Length: 192
Image (cartoon, rainbow, N blue to C red; front, top):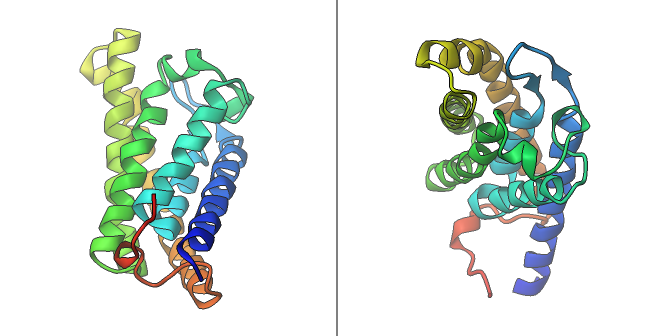
């Protein structure tokens, strides 16, 4: 397989995960300040399966689609106002989250154990970005921001991290055996 073919396959997978993120974002449980959504599960899956570069690309595509008006954010919302609104920090936090999950997996190995560690770290990164942004944009005290934007999401975040780890590691293994991904992504030269 040539580098161009490999890159095209990875770009298609990144686009697919952008779409999956948009679909899972519609699975919401409303809470007073910030809803629980399936977005973070999708972020964990994308990064666990695709690694740092293409996992992050999938999130950038997802955010770009939402920013230009495609209703892919939670509750079928879209637009720049969502990115800069009170919950925008969670969306922006998806970028470093995807990169860190993928990077951790590439530096260790694509196992369920490492995926669980990486996705738990990713959950904390997303919640930290979101909580800081929520505090600043809504003018909340730290106590209120933590109670509304961080603490309620830890139990569900751990469940989503476990799901992303187990599903992601299994799907990645199957994609590798189908020659859609290579076992060690960071050892392959990326052509520009």
